[in-house]
Image 1 (cartoon, rainbow, N blue to C red):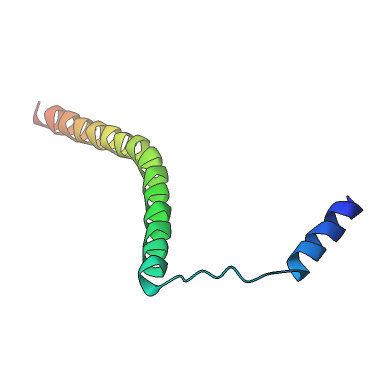
Image 2: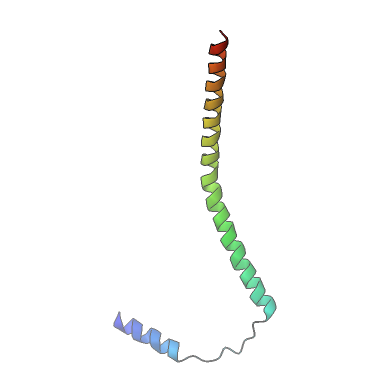
Amino acid sequence: MRLVTVLAVLLAIIVEPAHAYIGPGLGLGAIGAFFGALLAGLLAILGFFWYPIKRLRRRRRERREASVAETEETGRS
């Protein structure tokens, strides 16, 4: 484990230039791709949890409406 740490530190210290240019177009594209993937992941998680919540809310509303209708029906008799 200690050898791995020493090698990682040496590789971090001995850095050579890459001789590469990253222009603003590539930078903005990378940022856009990152945020797009992040948003897609969050929406997937939200969608995964939203459907059961929506179904539960619909069931509760239907039960409430049924009990109100039953109460009104009983009151009219």
